[in-house]
Length: 468
Picture 1 (cartoon, rainbow, N blue to C red):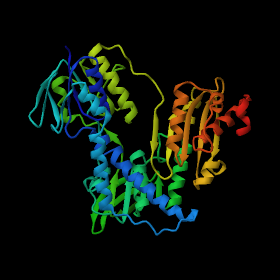
Picture 2: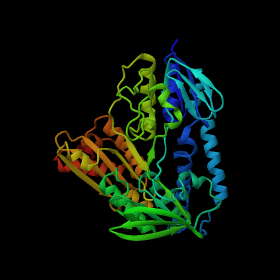
Picture 3: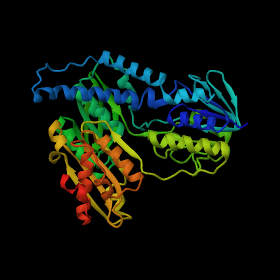
Picture 4: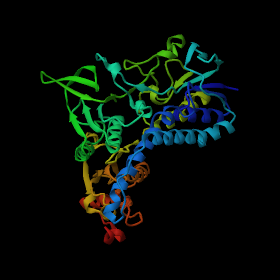
């Protein structure tokens, strides 16, 4: 019987362990902390619990608009953090993946401390475990990227938010990627004065240009100071009231101060503690573990999945990675990674979400048309009073298939989820228009955008035309 060690119990590791056990391997899952990894303990689960609280505050302030008398909401941050811990504990305790893994007979070692290779088939942990196996799968996740800037140790990470005794009066967020914009949006709703600094020309640089512009505009309207292309950081300094960031723009030195500075400069791998050299596992120039299309490392019996590979640092790809890595570890290298459209999203105010290609990406290889429906023209958004935003479809002219969907505004994530189904099943805009959706709904905005694309293509939308 093949024996497999999976290191790391986040989404990639959990699914890898389940898949390996289902294939008949004697499987051991070892994790440095608790089951669920970063996603459950200090990533999406706790951060989105905070984001949900921010949404509740915004909705409470909207009540008067609908004739409901209420007082201004007051946040008890200490009580909120207790709720966050309860949510994390609940998620970990009732994870359906964990129940399946245990039923499959996987040996689980939690809070074993960091694991390191002793040789190519043996790992040891800080807690004193020594484990050997035929195959090993690395799913150790990633860490916040650090900056080589004097005083960087004075900055905080997103984890700090889960340890604060109270809401800081001001926060400066360095980095306009997914983590940075979520933190900026959350603490703005909580009452902090927030400034968001992005080194590049736009926040959310991996998203469609219209999404970046829409979210930045929404942030500025809500009071967040957004500074894109701000220059380069010279240093961080401690001040009596907090931390100062010194930076240079076009040869001019500037400074800005806040009670808390959060560095959200990206996510990277941290393979140093694994002692990869003992197993001859290679890493690339960026520090990520090198893998081929079967997720094999430079050592044929060692595989890697999830953030540690630097491939696509999101939960859905991590789950796919775990499945593929375990399949190939047990059955041999037969299952290559499939190329499919990934969904990314931010639970910000306004929300944003994407599936598939951006307009710029699509234009490199397709003759495309774009159809945009703005939220100030659709019924459900008007009814609910959420008229800021849009739904944008990028469509191939030749096939009428959807290449990408980009949404900014209320329930953007739920709209994009339906678009993900349409793209993954190869639906055309005509197929989408002719799909009977409930009315009036946010998802209906997707049908409006599809109808606009169908009209541009002179397609007959048939029996649904009167509704659109």
